[in-house]
Each structure stands twice: as C-alpha cells, then as structure tokens.
Length: 374
View 1 (cartoon, helix red, strand yellow):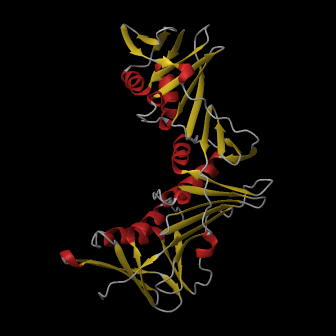
View 2 (spheres, helix red, strand yellow; view 1 turned 30 degrees about the vertical axis):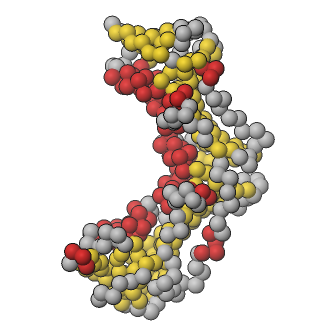
View 3 (cartoon, helix red, strand yellow; view 1 turned 90 degrees about the horizontal axis):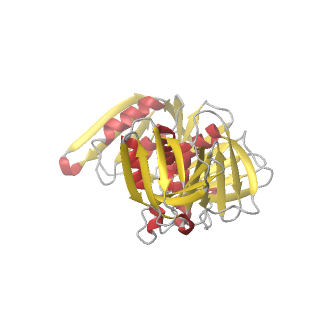
C-alpha cells in the first residue's frame, strides 16, 4: 500500500485525534494510530477503548488497505519536517512502513490493522444538534468542578440533562457544584447521561471556533459527537448521579453584589497569605463594605483587603476555600457577580449578573469553618 499526503495536513489531523490515544502496556496497539485507506480517503483512528476519535482527509493513492502506525515516532517525525509532500509505503506482509520526504527516508515497524480494536458504533440512538459554541461554553463552565475521586465514579463526569425546555449540565466534587442551563437548546424527549471528563476535554480542545452545529447521538451506554471531519465516541459513566437539586439552598436572605474582577483580584492576593492546607479566606461583610482576610499562623502571615460592594441582609462573617472561589470567578465572564448566603455554615451561591438571557449559571460553594482570628 502506498499513498502521498502533505506533512502539515496529516500532522494537523493526527494532533486532532491524538488525545484519545492510550499508553496501555496491557494492549500496546492502543499506542498506535489506525490508518485506513478507501477510495482515496484516509481515515485515522485513535482509542483507549473508553473514548475513540476518528478523522479523515483525502490522499493521493489508488490502493486500499489498513495499517497501525506507532503514534509517538510518527508525530515526532512530522513535527520535524517542513511543509512538503510525504510518501508512505507499507509492506502488506511485514507491516514495515517507509516514509519518504525530500531526500530523507525513515523506516518504522507498524502492526496489522486488523488487530486494532473496532471503533464502537452507537446503535438505536436518539439524536440532537447543538451549536459548537453552546457545547464549548457548557464544557468550559462545568468541567473544572468535576471530581477526581474514583471512589465516586458518578461525580468524575458531567451530568447532562436534556429536556424539551432546556439543556442542563451539572458538575460537582462535593465541595463545589456548577449547574449550567441553556434555554435555547432542547431535545424532543427528556433523558440524562453522565459524560466522562476525558471525552469532554477532548471535545473542548477540538471543537471548531466557527459556529457549526455538532451532531450528538446517544443511547444508554455511549455518546457519539460529529462535527466537521471529526468523530468522537465515548462510553458513558454507568452510575446514578446524586440529587444535586437537594443541596442547592433556596432561602438566601443575604446577598452580596460586587465587581467580578475586583473580587477575583483581591481574593488572589489575599489567598497567597492563607494556610496552604485549608486555603481559608474570611469574608466579613458590614454594610456596603467587604473585608477579605487570611492568615497562616505557622508562618505569621496575614493579609487584609477592603472592597466596596452592594449588600442586602444582616452583617455576617463566612469562610471559604479561596481556590474554589477563584476558580469559579475565573470561569465566569460577566462584569458583576452576586454571592447569596444564609448562614456561615451553609453553602453560598455565586451567580453572574446580566449576560446572555438564554444562559442560566449557578455555582455553589461549601463554606469552611472559621478559625478564631479576628
């Protein structure tokens, strides 16, 4: 089998799907790209058995065939070559691969493409279509709150709820929770599933910047995404997601409204002086003044800042993990945010003010017990 392709075109497509590769020592072939040529079209696949990606591009050839090629050496070779045509020659019996570019010749050992795992097909699927920008925003706003705790597998993914009224994406690690809802996206029937974090990260990095529609097909075990010439299929997390609505407080009489960037900047500075284990910052609200402070007793470090704010409710003090608040504020794009609270031992709600009327974002953060410093 022989084909000719541009170095830059091939490299771009390989990089688009390389995130799905596995470094499995149990199944070494998963470290390879699968090349399949049919009717002048090259389809490239990569998989770790949980998540698979494919892409395709036209090549110059009059042959058909398949070969599994080691990913790392191929990527490194193409990265080091200038833009030019390269010729791949594959020995169909030994699976040896020769790459010719300019005056250079490079030989490597491939594997039988027939031994490469079959890319799953999502059968008996329901389908919806989403603008790429909506899907990208949903992933960006939620994925940072996903848990890394393998003992709670349901929380290691993003919970996707589709209904005739809206789409809802939820992520939580039990310390923070994000609910992202779109009123301008919906499906004909109500359903829900849990998307794994790796698949969402791959989608996030490969979704096009131009606003095209993403086709989503799903059944009880898998989800399939198609946009442009990229296909991604992943196994869903087969777990029951916790009842997130039950932990969202509904009665929050104390409401702080403040400039997001000012709040973020102040927290970032004060957090430098916080205890490196708890990352605790204290918010003391009196009238329309917010005092942010932190202390690390072990090193005699402390910091205090004052900010103007709008506040409705009784004066209060509450402690939070600064990292969680900073992460949430960074993942919002509005000018002002509100922090709604009830008591110092109950969760606070961080809500953007203004913005897209079709977008409903709620971020919940659990408080931490305050130390006794003043």
